Length: 300
Image (cartoon, rainbow, N blue to C red; front, top):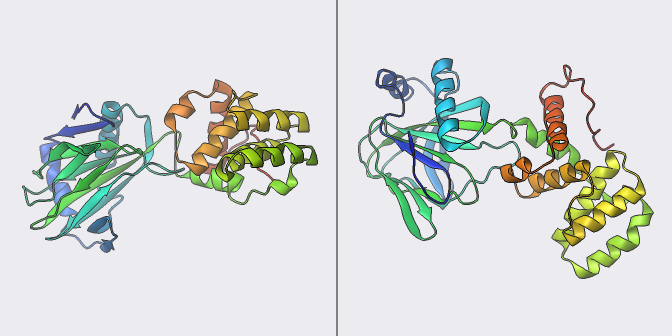
């Protein structure tokens, strides 16, 4: 598996799995499976979830290869889908930026020879990678707002097996964490001392900007920050100044995660204590009984 230099992390291979394992992937299409037809405006395909049908060591090995070549810290779970496109199927150009709890990367393993259905990646308007189907060929890509790709129209059946990988710091539980913290947030609970500052900010900035700053203050309020700290954090967030504390930095990153999606660069830039707090929040969501670490409490 080798990286291809371009606008986002992508790798290609002619031997996605060991040759002796290729039959296992083909068998996924002959055994009974719960096929679901996807007829979205940008993706036309039959898909079946086939988790558990492949040996765990094989899946773990692929996760390790993809993580190493794409430079991602991948961890369980790994989901597997069998995908079948028929003549006339394909996908329009699109990207897949990871949201909170969303997969970070995919490995697409092809089973058929060229029947149309080319995987194409784009660098602006230019086709950057064009991969025709071939048995055991594969494409691995990191999902981001830059990962523009499509699948050209098929002329006959095109079978692929797709491995879906999650990043360690954005597991499925991340969506539950941010929904619990930010999904039903109300600024009405904030101290009244913030009212004149927030009103003045609303006269100068659009709603999206003031809502982000207010969400940061609301998170900090739920975590027990005093009014002076809330006021300082709100003013810093509005002006674009640096975070006022490690907890403020974590709150800003959580708001970005909730609104825009997973930002691994922003996470890497967090102070170490903030990253530890994020991991503890995830542990509490993934193991609510076993977790006992002191973490910032959820808002009441």
